[in-house]
Image (cartoon, rainbow, N blue to C red):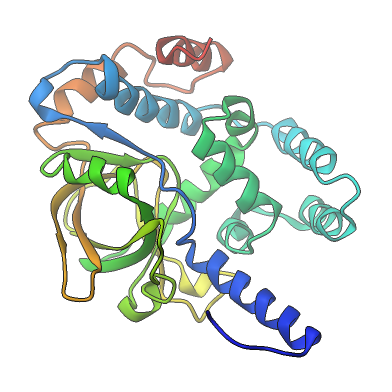
Length: 302
């Protein structure tokens, strides 16, 4: 029970406020991950294959040649998706008229059609939709590179997780995981804990993530507070496909599971050989639709 409210208008306002907080902190989303088991060596089958091929998919999208048509294609799909929703259609029209690449972080954190559609596509691996978002993903990547954190940080993310999801992570301590989405975290531990409440079905989880700014990361991370739609949030955003090493998982006295991870570089000695081998099978230059198709074929997507 969060509150006892007797007036309908106050109840509606409270629900809207709670939903806004829940969306901003993003603790109720399933965290889509791939696991790389270093004990399997350079195998590209099974889970290791999913891990590597998703990294190649991102690399391919980032190197695809830009065109004006790609934005028009996404806007057309969004208008069809939100047909009959005047509020979202108004925002889509605003995006169509005013969007520039320098505003990509502001648009992403605005929590509208862009955020919802992109993260759903990444979560369920909707390749068609991910492909339509390629210009937006590239713009976010460039902005995170531009505002890359210059000093080492520790950030937090509160999460509710099903027991089987948590068990998979417990069984993967010492291994690498890649996050199949842009990962939103906070410099403020208390803020990250806001929605890590008790649940009969889920476990309360707090990710503690250390990122060393001295390392060379292909997947950047940045404090986006001054560029966000919510400038008061202490938000650090990690690039889609960021790779982390699971260091430790333990439960504290408050029945909160603490998951400690460190950001890893693709140059890590356990990852570098296999990722370089896979990348060498593709052109290092700009990629095209044919190159994208080759990656999808290797992923078993068609």
